[in-house]
Image (cartoon, rainbow, N blue to C red; front, side, top):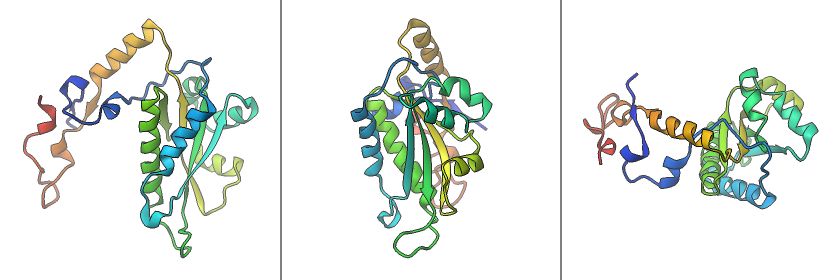
Length: 208
């Protein structure tokens, strides 16, 4: 798979918050997020678009202020995610509603709409200098059991939310990470008229 650098210096005029967002997988374990700021994240999620305005997103939020519930959420994670996610202030289980409320039919778009809401949440978090790391590495069946979800709901991801460390070594690692971030060129996934026909033969957004 071909990829190309997407350093800030090489990215054209997209929204600065999109360029700023990254998955740090490091948190300051002592710094708390205010209730007001946490609510702002979910307010941003609330204003996401959805099919038939179903708004099929749901969020179960636990914070370090409730250690027992926090550890219950940590227990859902696969081993590789536990060490760094344990330093986040909040963990959020995202859940999609699989049935449409207006006719109880299967909501084919539920996962898509949930993803859109998390994208809104993440952009709002970035504006507040809050880090959101998204994980698919958790035990989905266990999550359904622990939180007593019925067959109409599916756990999709767990978000680790907190503040990044404020120290020189972290800033060095961050700079190195930004220097090596890669994304596919547009020509590999944006097509014109027919599948596989690049929308543009040249990835214009890679040029300044």
